[in-house]
Structures are given as structure tokens and as C-alpha cells.
Picture 1 (cartoon, rainbow, N blue to C red):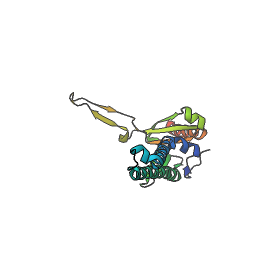
Picture 2 (picture 1 turned 60 degrees about the horizontal axis):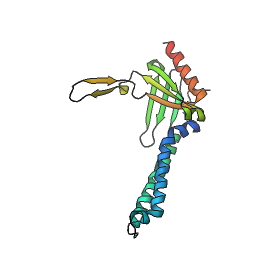
Picture 3 (picture 1 turned 90 degrees about the horizontal axis):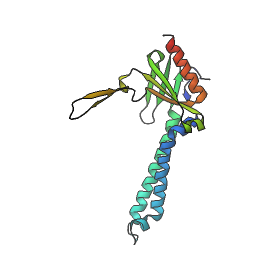
Picture 4 (picture 1 turned 135 degrees about the vertical axis):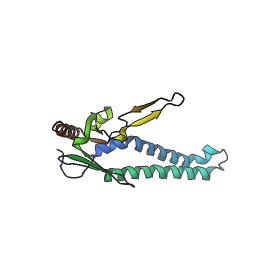
Length: 180
């Protein structure tokens, strides 16, 4: 059940899905750093003269990987959404905070998608679209002088929710939208 007028964090399964690709990159950085730190001298030069540089690069890779993991954890702690009778507010950001409120009357479309990994985790992506100019993308083709405008590049809001909550939110928004 969606809690009205109460800031709500994403579920752990949602964060696992959202952070999976980013966290995987961090693990690769950490593993690469460990390999360079341990075997760096032998890898870079046969006589081991580059061992110090290899260890420094390895430690740097480990620190970057750990930093990304810490950032993802803080992002999870600070990401909340609040549903009211007439709007949804999404607060996010670690270093720079962002708060976006979308009135249900402004919403043009609500899409929900579930890929195989999402099904495994029991989550659904909910994309909320408005007629915002942020979603427009203008591209000019050099040489021909033609241009085109692509719409629906990025949704105004993307939430990855437990599947039951996602369907409840989608139907709440669509019901309010139909009552306009």
C-alpha cells in the first residue's frame, strides 16, 4: 500500500537493480586495483622497477571503486518519494540535492516495464512523462541543414518500485488523470 503524504525510500531490491551496473563497475575497479597492487611489478616490468607505480595505480583503483560504492549507498539513503492526493515529489542527490514535484494533472503518460532481472527481484520501473521541454532533443544534421526533434528522451520521473506498489502508483496517477 502506498503511504500518502509520507516520504518513502525505495526498497532494497529496487536499489540492487538500479545500482547493479554501477556497483559491478566498482567491483571491477577494486579487483583491477588488487591485481595491480599485488602483481603490478611483475606485470609492468620484468625486473620489477615499475612496482611502485603499479601499487599506486592499484590503490587508486581500489579507492575509486570503494568511493562509488559509498556514493551508491548514500544515494539510496537520500532518495525518497512522496505521493499525495494530487502529486508526487521525488527528492534525490548526494552532493547536490534535487526535489521534483509533479502534479498529476501535468502527467501525460505513465509506463511500467519489467525485464528479466526486474522480475527476478520483484520490481517494476515506472516512467512518468509530462510535456516538459526537458524531454525534447534537437539534433541538426550537418551538411544537409535538416533538423529533427526527438521527444520522450528521458522521463520526468523514474521510480523502481516493488511490483505491487508500482501498479498501485500507476493506477492512482491514471485515475487522477482521467478525472481531469
